[in-house]
Length: 387
Length: 132
Image (cartoon, rainbow over all chains, first blue to last red; front, side):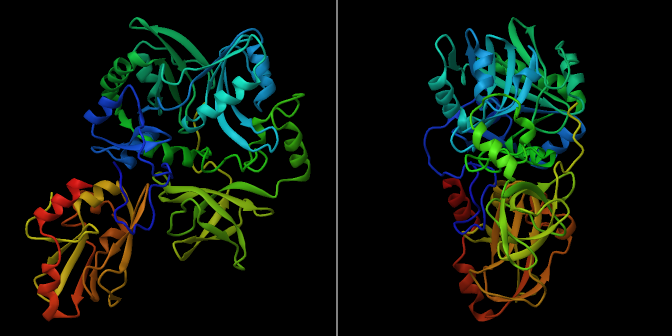
């Protein structure tokens, strides 16, 4: 368990649960593997997951993904299967992005917005199997909410099934990821944002060309009972490529560098896609989706604030909830997440900033009483090589 | 993991009396560096800064969290580990050696023995962290 260093700690884990409840946490089918590998376990979104592994640590794991390959257990991610006549059409009328932009076998980053406010209920990946089947991967903490909203609104004949714990998900990310999958006899040549089903050792794997690191990579979904076999095979075959098991700590530094917002920090029910600069993930031409009316109006008027990247000009690491001011000491917004960039060796993060602040502006961030100069940038912070 | 010759605070600092008996060296423990994870910044006061027992004198920040470093005694900063500016990971790799943080010239030398007696010895510190 990760604990603050003292009762008077100046700050705690940046991306972890802000709740401190000691309730029962769900465990991944790979839980015993994490313990055996020296995983430092911590609660995250109702799950007990590895932050990092004692032998490597966040920075080595991060570097493995940028230069070789990293293997992540992301079984905490939600899995929702929507089936029945017109399933895809139903999902397309609810979620924000336009499923018509992809075909069967394609994956898409999309948003679920609140119909009344346009606020982001969750961001998720939709895997389109066909007109009658869509598989969704929401964030762990939001899975119940997504299932509830989609089930409540589903027309007769469309079923929404929460299959969260039936499947495990293992992410294989980094420049050597394709070689590693090839070595196991798995498909790896399919395009970014597509998926294939394949037979492997008597089970079925869904090999998705998706990820959350900014690197070329895959997310493999399989029956929970088969997860340890694949995990062991990946680590075993991965040693010649410099593969490391990676925890959620590296996942957070990698996604921040890649400029991917995290729901619950950078985006939330209080933030709309227009404010989050996620308008590209909204199918504006669709006749309907949840939140369409308010979002169209906000887009026409212009958002009052926007989500930007910030990077420290000197020292200082932005952390959630730090206040941001301009050089006349006027409050202009708040940091939503931040970390130390192992690649860039500076503090980086996201901040919701009032208009008209934007790219190239300099701001001051209150880092525990010290004013630190930071530059407003358009993420990503590193070159993204997902394709 | 917890050298016998050191004294320990409940805030996870270690204390060693230097060759000059009026100076103590301070760092953070193995337990602390392990809980923090990869250390990326260490903020330490300049030489000559007055520090007060029980008050924060600096910060240690990792990829995922930040924590205060507390002064175990009252005194003035005699030396700071400049190496940590470029190699903060020394705190992880060698917390009791090259990862030391500051030397403090003790203000009340007569009271130092009493102060040190009020800290934890290795066995008591280990027992404390095993409960956390």
